[in-house]
Image 1 (cartoon, rainbow over the protein chains, first blue to last red):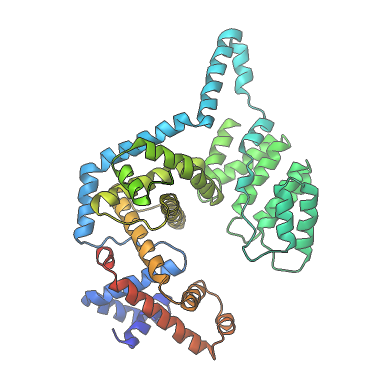
Image 2 (cartoon, rainbow over the protein chains, first blue to last red; image 1 turned 90 degrees about the vertical axis):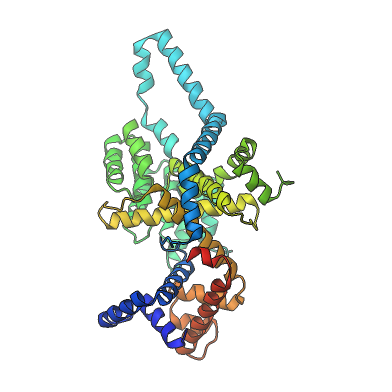
Length: 263
Length: 187
């Protein structure tokens, strides 16, 4: 394929052709399957280099036909086997067993104490729900491989060691340092304040995350809801959770739904 | 399970050996949970991704033998990661289309996922055959690192020289991909 044509493909994929040129080029592709294939590969390579998965094109060839056939003949059985394995794992893991144990314990309690106890068991307090849903794994990872000295790194490490006061001073230093700020720091700041029971401060930090331009800004909403939960301001927590539930693309969308139901 | 090779694990998996599957659950599933949760997903998303990954690998191995070059655990984790990124992209598209999305046959989705994974493996392997400089240059260019930074970083004479280099590196990558026998199944 000559270089001129390859440059054209690049221009087409890069969106730098005029509307007229695009139409012409697409007509050319329609008539030339070889060219269409080249464009497709070029597009997939670009997507890969950008860190995305390739386009959803299923070519019609012997291999894809075989895949289709296998799925048709054995797909259901394979899927069942995988599901079974999953069920078995769920049954054998400690978390699942604990849940079973809780269920048995609850049943006994109901039998022994009667319906009054049932109400007590069902009323789950905001603190308990907070403990159940708050997870530091939900915080973004902030430390870049080449970053060895920054205040941000010190703060995150102090946070991980549960030295929240130290973490907060490091985050302050980072925010004042004049470097370009990674908004994720606000989540850590807020979480550290929450650990120190400074809910007002925590809320302020989460608000900064929410109003940032980070792709992860909806994490701010999730943590803000948890902060309200910790402060036992259930109504405020509920209204934020509702907001998350209304937006499937927001962080922890399904967990927010569960938590809202629990409340 | 250090004494079993990745390809033997694959064989056991295809034959439905439950010990192998439960070992994979113990060693890989927790990592997938934390990866998915750190990337805007939930525990149940992770469960689904893990099962889809096992399903995809078994189907693929039944149709055509393939070789796993890393540990099986690392391979499975990569498949899960790619599946989750695909899912996130799909969600983004659904949001853009106001929740209206194409209804696809479940089998088509599986085939798409298998082909995507195979393309991913092929591209990654061919990238390793380029020079370190070429590889880095391509990634910088396609991740929109500004031209003037690329020019400085790689000491090119001009922006045009940098573009010429990007173009050559990509051409070489495409050539390697097309020359590989696996490409025929994917195009």
